[in-house]
Image (cartoon, rainbow, N blue to C red; front, side, top):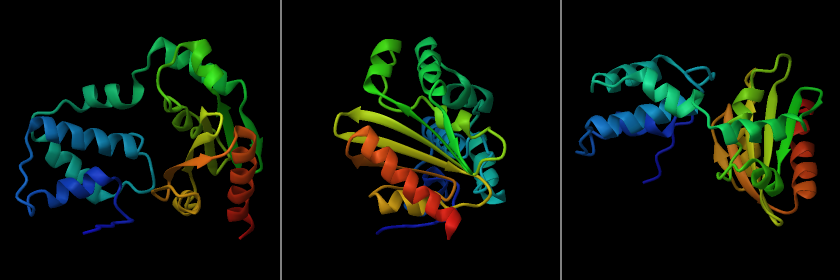
Length: 200
């Protein structure tokens, strides 16, 4: 069974809503994981996909004696020293073209800063705070032949369709894909495709 709810704020919202029907127990650790998924996917309940249903599910999960402040800190706001240095590498390369802002993060950036992850350390969410832009993209080099791309959108633009075009997926306001190619190739192709949503 492939259960799709395009309007849901996160996959964990869907899980929380169907687990009882599937005779699956929700206990405190599971509730904490589900709520963490809701918090991260909505960037702290800030995306356009955050509706009353998502907030009701969150409130139900909090009934398991959860501390939402601690979960929020661990999931969104708490950063290591290395991740902040890694952000610096990305921030030094931020570019803007019309309604699109993007940056790149390379293997060399990870090595120089000591960041151990292979993601953007949530830099894409920080860039989402820039005024007067509608789509934000981070390009994260996985190796010389693969790039992880993360999109965020504002003002109702659907970046999930962009991600699907490249074999990925996600939500209207947050999506991603791993794309074969060099950083230069992937950046050029993705930016061209992203600009098309404004022309159409």
